[in-house]
Image (cartoon, rainbow, N blue to C red; front, side, top):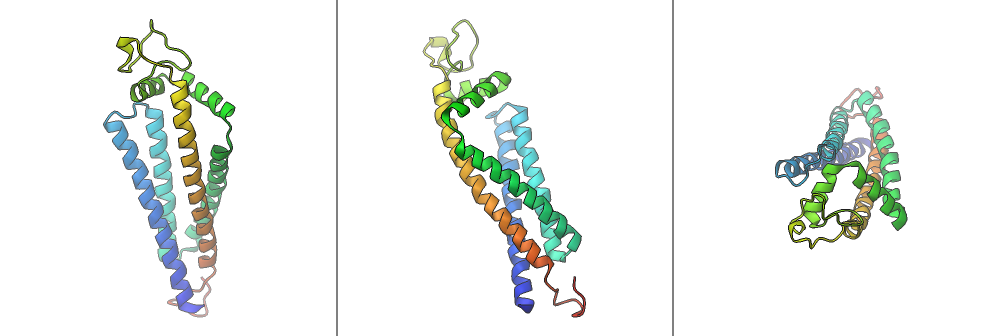
Length: 203
């Protein structure tokens, strides 16, 4: 394919990694914004999102530098890491789409019982109290609690969780296919000759 094929692979790989950089910065920005404005008070949730964003940013940076410099070692490690991320992301996305209502309800209840911070966030945002029942003698941050007009959160959470799981699963599947595309582009690009280098050298 010559120079045109080399340039096409290089530009495609750079564009893909620029997309990953933008997505990672968006994730970090949204998490920081949510924490700053008090939309999410759980440090674990915010820290997890920022951690994933930083990891994606570093992986994309390695891929971008490797693509620009046609660096064999960086491209090799980038290809391996991206393939592992693909396997994990594809599995999680498939699980999100395949989970049934009983499994979803069990996971939500476990998550509810394990984090009081998340309970307060959910009660405040959905204006509900408790998971299956409302304890009028307890405490609740919902606006409806002083009037004793709150309903349990379980039904609302399950409704929203179903939508979120379908959305996350769909987005995850989409990005998992861009990752396998990235693996293929990297493999193809690594095995092409750089036309600017010595024609007899295979870099």
